[in-house]
Amino acid sequence: MNEAATSGGREPDLPTPASRTTDGVLTPLAAQPDASGSTAPGAMDGLGGRLKELRRRAGLSLRELARQADVSPSLVSQIENGKSRPSVSTLYTFARLLNVPVDVLFDAEEPALAELPAAEAGDDAYDPANAWHPSEYATRISVIHPSHRAHLRMEEGIEWERLAATPERDVNFMKITYAPGAGSGQGAERQVHEGYEYGYVLSGTLQVTVGNEVFVLHEGESLGFDSSIPHFLRNIGDSDFQGLWFVHGPRH
Image 1 (tube, rainbow, N blue to C red):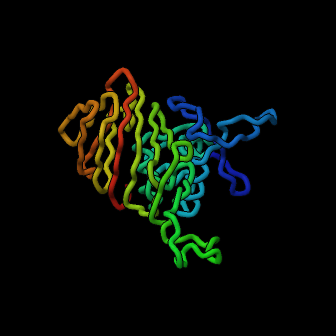
Image 2 (image 1 turned 45 degrees about the horizontal axis):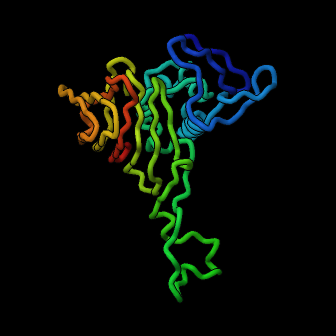
Image 3 (image 1 turned 90 degrees about the vertical axis):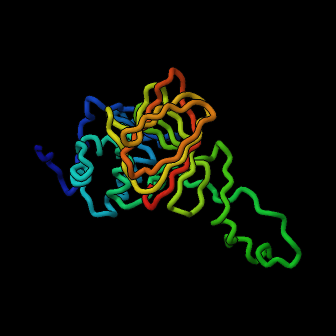
């Protein structure tokens, strides 16, 4: 592989892989000036910025992360610049290599608490002197309006929507959407990570392959499985699949 030249330690912007999409990763996207100086949405996004920051904190160059993840440096560059979307399996690989939970890569931190219970007389937690200090509830309760939920969009029309945002890092509670034909990896690529997954189908049809077993789930059906077994999800229907998903594990 030829090394691109850099100047002053700056990492080069690499060309977009021909097989990858070039639209933005997340919404809302930060507007960035294009080559003509005008502002164009989609040039940079939250996922790309966080991936770059975490990579640098881990002391990895763009090319080294690409090598360890077994993807091209061009792909990593395009994801970091908001010009390409990772697959689900690639996202899990990045999280594993950077030693962070997947939900760290979501687009925003929602307020942990929407509403506190009514104050009781003599309760110091509601004393005006403590008004600017978060109570213990703020890290234990998460109530999120749909318009405030963090989203993560990946290639092939896959979207994750986080439904709760407590500080616990071993769980992730999401609504997932797969467009018709969308799958969790490139081709038949399968995911492997620690923990367990539990899903409930809200609408549509989802084919789930776990090891040598293949299951087709329809509205109202549910499943759970050990996610250390290689697995793959694909929408085999002709409409969007939507489901509630709960992922539990040290590095979900």
